[in-house]
Image (tube, rainbow, N blue to C red):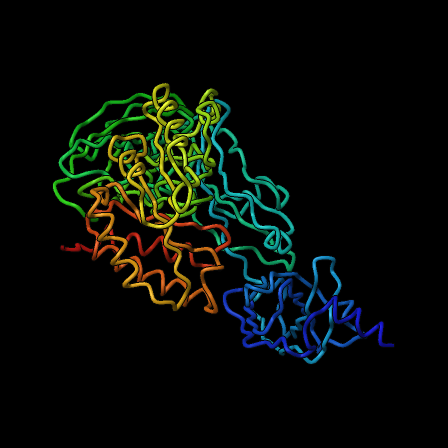
Length: 526
C-alpha cells in the first residue's frame, strides 16, 4: 500500500482539492472558467448537462489547457444548463480526479448563436472570390457546413467547415447579384451575416475598407510610422472585382489624381507621397470615382496612421506580426516588408563573419539580425571584428544587439557609434513588483553619458518568468510603469525592445498598446 501511495505522489505532486474554481460564467457564446492553486502541467476541463460523477464522466466533453493560464474559454456548442469540472492532468493524459472541484449549473441557453464569417473579396484572372481566414477548430465543431447565399436567401454553393473561399459565378448581360457567406450550425441555426457583396456585369473598383495599415493588405508602407518633414511613400492597391472592364479616377491622399483602366480581376498599385507636418494620429482619405460602378460602398478608404518626429523601433524577440504597433519581429517576412518594418533573424555571438553571411547569401534573406548577445563578462573584440568584416560585404543589413545589462564596454560603444551596430538593446528584465526606478535612472544616465542613448532601446521582459508571483494583469501594469518611466527619462531613445517568448495571455497585446500610448499619442517633454 505504501508503494502505491508513493507512486501517486510522484505522478501528482499536489494535495487533492488544492485546485479551486474561482469563476464560471457564460457570455457571448463562450463560458469562461478561472481557477487557482493549479500545479505545473495541465488542467482538464469537463462539461456535462448533469453534475459530473465517476459514472457519467465518460459522457462529458473535455478540453485540456495549460494550468498556468489560470483560465479557459469554452465555446459552448449547445444550450441549456451545464456543469464544469476540473482535474489535474500530466502530459501523458493521466489525471487526479476530485469530483468536488466543479461548478454549475451554468445557463448557456444562448450558446447556439454563431458569429458571422468575416469574409473579404479577392479577384484574379480566374475570377472573383469571397475569402476568409481558416475557422478555429472549436468553431468548426459548431458548423455543419458553410454556405454561399444570395440576397433572397437562396443557397448558391456549400462547402465544408474547413473551406476558406467561394468563387462567384459569372453574371452576364448587364445583370448583377448580391452574395454573402454564412455558417450553418449543427443545431439548425445559421450565423449572422456580415454583409452582402454585389457582383455582376459591371466594373467594380475597390480598395479594402480596413482603416488599420497593419491589417489592410491593400496598403504598403515605406516606413511603419511616417516621419514628419519627409516625403513618405504609401502605396495603395486598387482592384477591379467586377465582371467587366472599366476606367476610374483615383483621388490619392497626397492630393494627386490617377486615371486607371482595369480588366476584371486585375489590380494596380498607386503610390502617394505624404509629408506629415506634425506627429500624432492622422486620417488619410482615398476615393475612387467610376460612374459605371454599381457598388460604391467599397470605393473609399479612411486610413488611420501615426506620424513621428524620428524613426521608432518596437522590436520583439520572437513572433510579433499579430501586434498592431510592432515594427520588427522574427516571423512573417512579407508582412514586415509590407508595413515598412523588418524581419530580423536571431543569431548567436560568433567570431567568424561567414556565419552571418550565410543568412544573406540566399534569396529569402531576412532584413537584418537580432544579435543575441554580447555584454556582461564577454570580451567583445573578436566578435566585433567578425561583424565589421561582415559589414564590408553587407553594409545595409540592419543589426540590433541584445546586450547583457546596460554597462556597455568601450568597444561596444565604439561599434554603435561607427555603425557596426545599428541599435543596442540593454536587457533590463525586472521581476514583477521588484524595485526598478533607481536602476533604470542609473542605466539611462550611463547610456546618455557615453553618447549612445539615441541609438539605444531598452529591452524589457514580457516572458512569464518575469511576472514573478503576479498574474497577467499585474505583469502588464508593472511593464507599463517601466515604459512610462523610460519614456519620461529618455525621450531621445527611439523605442522599446521586448523579450516576448512565452508571455502570459494578453500581456503582449497590452504592451503593444503601451507603445502606442507613450510613444505615438502622448507628447513627452524633457
